[in-house]
Image 1 (cartoon, rainbow, N blue to C red):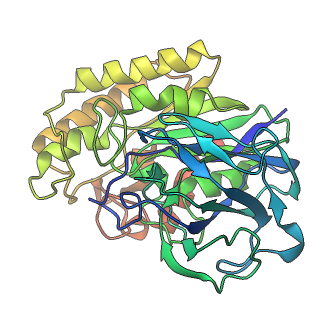
Image 2: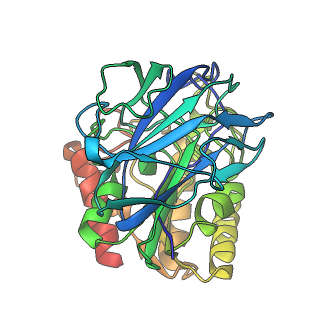
Image 3: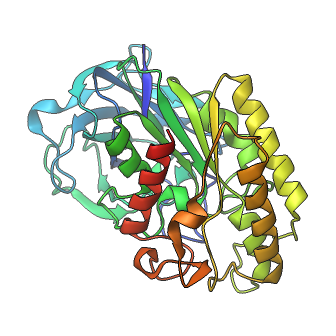
Length: 376
């Protein structure tokens, strides 16, 4: 039985927020990407997504390996991937592609590297914008390379790769549905200190990070993904081995309308508390329909950030009061209180502020992981 050990929700190709290769795509190049697994096993398989592609994408060759430093991999671990028994395959337009299981022993916490070679033009690439870890690109077929010398370009996004599964047989996975606070903005790049990483280390359970920076609960965004209400099935409910969902959403819905300075903060309708509450209730309904336990979180303090304003402040307090008191969720984690500045509860504690008064730093993400682990 396979269990999702890592995931990154796919996004429409875009360059409005993070420099990347998604719009140009790839041709006669190899892309090497590294992820950290939260479940071990003797076999692995990968899922590639072309969710936003209008034509099939040919994968000419692919390998997995245990990661070493930089773009290098452990030489004795390089393993060819097959797709339906073939070494090459096409990711269907608007679809995905699951590899055959590959014999490679990995442990929970293991860094796994996937290398994809594209010998034909891919067109714009379905991707995950904010990886907070380095991906590498090199000319030609570099799938068998054990060193990183031939990879001469780098990016902090993941391309086509959306999930890694292992034959762990686990059924106690925790999925985190959220925005940049879950995606890990403000954490140290390359250090795996998002709260999802820290939660996996604390609990020993598979943890799936289903966060997208800038994501909205109620509206689709050209830059920040499909709304959470639509992507819940794909990014959480269809992942094997998940039994718990943690929801941390709504801050962008109420905060985007407080600023005119960021062109990617569109759409930005003025959202009321009852609309957000209805969205939360629908998430709960869908997740419980699949038998998941659903945990809700209050919003983090955001006073002084570009999301702060009179309307956003009022709505956030109403929504948080509902999360705490309604009984709609199976359990509640009060992250607002856990990360608040005692001198000003509307602001992040200075020790947890990454600098923008909106996103925690590594220490703040550790507090979030501790709070959720305790509730679990």
